[in-house]
Length: 195
Image (cartoon, rainbow, N blue to C red; front, side):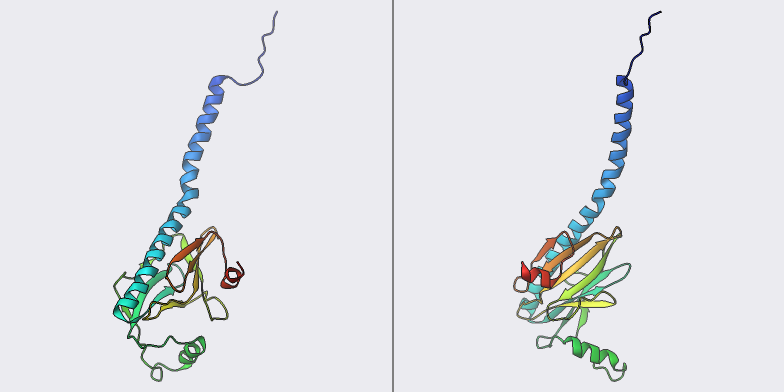
């Protein structure tokens, strides 16, 4: 009696396993790259928005600011004020917050619908922090502002955006051009000045 025992897998078994692995990869890869596509979209939008706000400030001789609202959903919009509006210091902002509504002077900034209307970040993304040169700490809750002067100069700033999986990306706004650079990790202004 001869025994013809085989060791190993048949070609059919290997093909079935490869088909299963391929199917799983086809389902997993879009989910893994989904956040990358969302963040790339946000970077492009923020880059275009920053340049447009800078240009509008120069052309219209007005002070603009991008307003960032933390939370879920994270939102952002544009506000504008007359040309000679001073950008309030952190101390001034804190002092104004302590005043009652009747004592507080009217905010000269008003929401505008151009270049954009109010927007929300894509689901799964939120603002982690906004850091502006000259402030002690990044803003991580409530509302943050990045100002654009009527001369077209913007505060050097970093916008950190995080995903549900706690991945963090940093968008750096350059003060003279309003251009946005993208860094695929969390950075702060102090780290950038060392580079």
